[in-house]
Amino acid sequence: MTLAEPSGPPASSTRPPAAEPEPARSPRPARTRQADRVARRLVRWLGGAVSRYWTVVVFVVAWQLWAQLNGYNQIVVPTPVAVVADVFGHPGAYLADLGVTLGMAVGGLLIGMLLGAGMAIAVWASALVSGMMTPVALAMRSVPVVAMIPVLARVFGYGWPTVLVITSIVSFFPAFVFVGSRLRNPPSGAVDLFDVLGASRAATMRRLLLPHAIPGLLVAFRLSAPTAVLAAMLAEYLMGGRGLGSLFARAVSFYQPDRAWGVALVATVVSVGCFVAARAVERRGLARFT
Image (cartoon, rainbow, N blue to C red; front, side, top):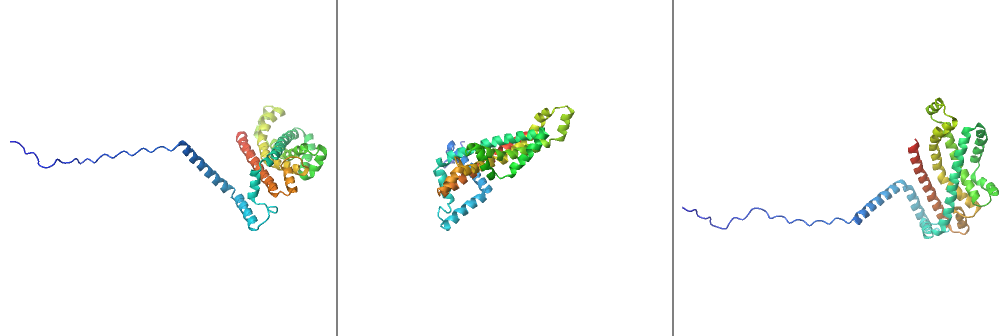
């Protein structure tokens, strides 16, 4: 007996058709990814700068609106846009004098700090030197720098030596005070230990007091760095010659207010930059010597 074959069409398969593979996405070019990272960093930097210096931004915007809405002439009140345009449009008019002022400021800063630190060491080592130099240092600090410039100019001449002397005097007193304070107040336990070991005064100075005085020297460096730039400009303004101070005097004499305000802007930026750089040096030094 044979089985009858089932009638009708064969049953179709119930398995779903295989899905077609999606085309692979091409990776983003490396240049595009790098541009995105740079853009994100720039946005973060701008956000941080605005959050820190928003008062400066508000001041500049208010200055621009005030000058435009009142219709002031550029000779009376130049707008910030005109000042910035003069600085970036004529950089050659500033760079040479800026280099002279920076050279005088850096040279006077180094000389003044070395003299201040050396005098502080001499005052610590000798009571005679202390009685002679401490009143002189205090008197030099009490006399305004503007009053000293004509006297020093008669001695050193109306040129760069007087500018260098002025910046050295301005940088001298902070180093003298801070280094001297650290030398007079060393760690008491360390001093007793050196005395017990029979160390000489020279050995105590070299191995204990000088490393202990370096933080004070770094603080003096941070305080004197921006002041040296302004002192150099003041001396140049009163005596003539070259430098940002002389450029400011010429701009005022020839009725160029945008150039005069541009000099003030450049001097402010340079002074702030010197302060920031000196603060970074101070932080690195304090992390090592404290």
